[in-house]
Image (cartoon, rainbow, N blue to C red; front, side, top):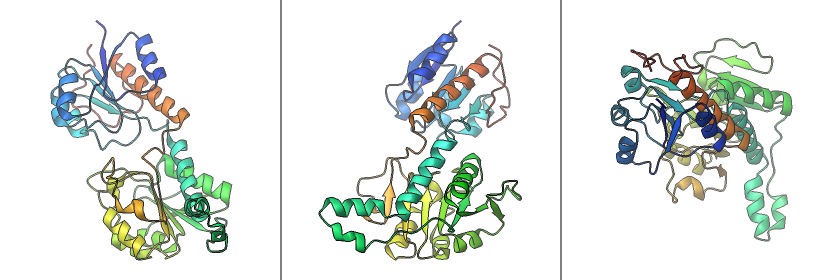
Length: 324
């Protein structure tokens, strides 16, 4: 019997082709509302999902045959891992697919902020060539980058900043106590990192523990000349506090790829600030990164449906659904 793989939001053809060549049938979703998700997931053996579809307990319960939820990407805040675990369903992600893509995007935000590229572009297009004498950028050489969260992306970013731009890099992660990388110094005091960094970059998952963990207190620790970058998850930051810090001049600017509510409202106050650069949660979505995410997620589906423990499982199901 051919297994049915549900893809709520379409992915690259190469990922779907991988599954079809393995003998699986594919169902691409028609809508991301909970009602439709609950209806379309019925009878499916696997779900390959991106970040927008919310695979909550109700959706998982509607899928009697489900054996694996494979995430296209790394963040898992749109999946109820606890509910999946209770029902014997594997949850996987693609940690090796997009780390470099995100790290490159973060460096692009840091460079753009430090060189005032967005505002300079805007002013020059309006005819203000004299802006060149009013906007002064910041050299990255010798400056300190503070990285909060030292997973794959954080470690790759540290290497790029240190080796490529001669920045000093300090990292904070409660689960990391020492570093074998010469480009990275480990700090044990979060406040010290915020106070001593010229750029802060967040690389934290969104969990019950990290939700809203960065707010007015942390922004008050930063230098008025420092920049803040978030390409992890919007919910980690209290967005209103960030806006207040920017408007009050507590920090020099921000590069934001993720938002508390996605998609953000068009009147989001961050969009009105000249010292903010925004992108639509697309740091991971290079052509190469997207293909890797699609294929790696499909590989996890194939492993589970073949009766093999997946390479990138993030849970240990209470009752493994591997008897096909």
